[in-house]
Length: 337
Ligand SMILES: Cc1ncc(COP(=O)(O)O)c(C=O)c1O
Image (cartoon, rainbow, N blue to C red):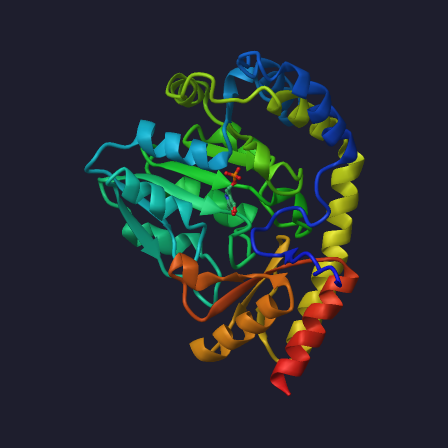
């Protein structure tokens, strides 16, 4: 019997190329130690502090950045406070706000772009946290350094801005914020990053934040004991050391992102230019979108139908290698015939 091809995962913005082989080795080596309780991730916090040229007291490691987002809502807001994020953004902000019974205001985008200035009219005395995914997931667009600084200058210091840079390593736009210098200037800025995307460690659950010492201290204090499993620390440390791997993956993604975007746009799809490892496509008809989605799934190309996150008329397609991207373009071409 002919073996069925394994579906290609283009639906969760993971690293298409997987994790570095060096990291896999580090994980396998540590499987001997899984009977032992993990230590607090001080080595990783120290290494991240060196990489970002901040103090280790500014770094907080968490079990994936979603655990940090959860911790931020839990620790920095009270039941009556309000949270702001953009519509069509990372769904966990609103989901976790709801889980904690906090009101979450969704600011509309303009042509799928997040315009920070448009947040200002929504700020009230109750506003405590603003979440900005940059690049935004699912649309892939960015907020620039200038726009971010202007926002930080315009809001009260009592409002925390969480800059979620999960896809930062994929960005090629020179206007992308230099977040660490801004963090030094604005103590109400928290930067969060993850090992789940370009580092290829989504299954291990490692994220980290860069925050004012006091805030990082609160977030650390409120973490669950032994939150960090014993395979994580060496994996993350090895991943940070293998810079070459990250450069290679980012380079391939940038080339393929352009290729796929051009191809989709030539086919007259409303594909939005992206700075991430995925492309957002808008459809005027929900029906047409669902039919195309079905065709992708039937061909073993797993992409994201954004209606699972309550976002209508749109698909998010992960960027593959040239062979996969050609399959995507062929499939769309045939569908539109
Ligand atoms: C913008 C953004 N932030 C955070 C995450 C979650 O990352 P983690 O796996 O570190 O929880 C995602 C995952 O899709 C994301 O798109």
